[in-house]
Image 1 (cartoon, rainbow, N blue to C red):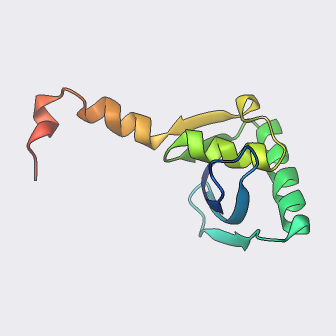
Image 2: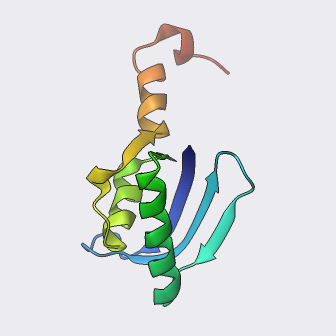
Length: 105
């Protein structure tokens, strides 16, 4: 299983960010968007859902895992207990010092 996830947030320079919304898709299903701002029930439900997926060996797919993992911390989750695939890192690995991709249009 793969969960593609993206959070929107504010106060990113603080330890616990103010989560505004999350969009996610499990195994390519249509994306679900949830409003999290001032919604502790939605945050608790999301936390429970993420733990359930982790227990089923689900991988977390994102762009910029440092930001998305910070959102996990804001939910009270340890991001090191999840398996991450960071597309930003993958993109950098493909394009960094690779002549085939340097000057393409």
